[in-house]
Every structure is written in structure tokens, then in C-alpha cells.
Length: 149
Image 1 (cartoon, rainbow, N blue to C red):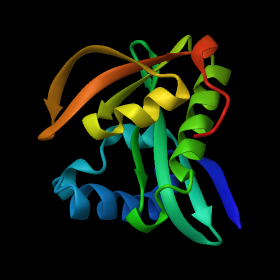
Image 2: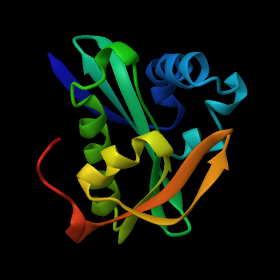
Image 3: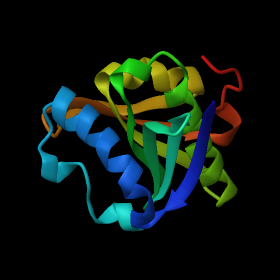
Image 4: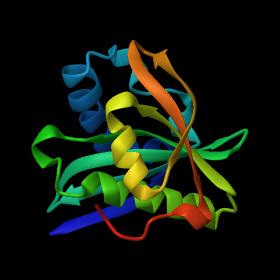
């Protein structure tokens, strides 16, 4: 059975942290200290499950522009099964429900096509963040593509 749920602050971290470590530390080479930060305490997290196993996670945080999503991660064996799509759509829906006019993501370069399928549009130039190429992307409520990809 597939499910996903919201949680706030550090309450989510017992299921989120192992996913982040697998994806960001083991796969992408990120430093372990960079997988969590003070924003986790104010974030709304979404965790996706296959049965009782956590397989993906992401967070929604307040930002100067409204809200942004980030730390989107799905364990390697579960990719291409729409968990990422589910997580992102739940996060953006929550952001818009909270009054956001736009949702921002600092997208890793290889994830830009994924975000475009949801309706995000690239803004600005490519830059490096934690030794990875990234680009900011913005989603307006009227640009959400309803069909899952």
C-alpha cells in the first residue's frame, strides 16, 4: 500500500533522515552535516511510504518570496514510481493552501525536467550549491499541471 503524510518540525526526522542520508550523502556525496538544518524545525514535511517503509520525503518552508520546497528525496530503488510527484504535489498544495502566491524550488540540474512536468518554470541562471549545479524554479498556482507524469 502506498501512503504519504504531513508532519511538522523535527517530529518527521526519524523517517526523513535515513532517506536523506541514502540519497544526499551516499549517492550524491553531500556532507552529512548538510542533510539537516534549522529550517527542519519550522518545515512542514511530507513522507511517502510503501507499506510501512519510508521511501521518499520533502519539505515546505517559509521563504521571503512565500514558500519554497526542498530536500526532495526518493530512495533509488523506488524512483520512477511517482513518489516524487506525490511528495511535490502535496507540498505545493499545502503551500498554496497556506496562502502562497508562488512556490520556489532550488532544483538540482538533473531534476529540472521533473519539475517542469509539474509546471515549475526556471528563473535566473544556473549556479552551484553544495557542489551541485542548480537553478531556481517558480510555480504559480495557475500553472500547475494536473496530470501526474
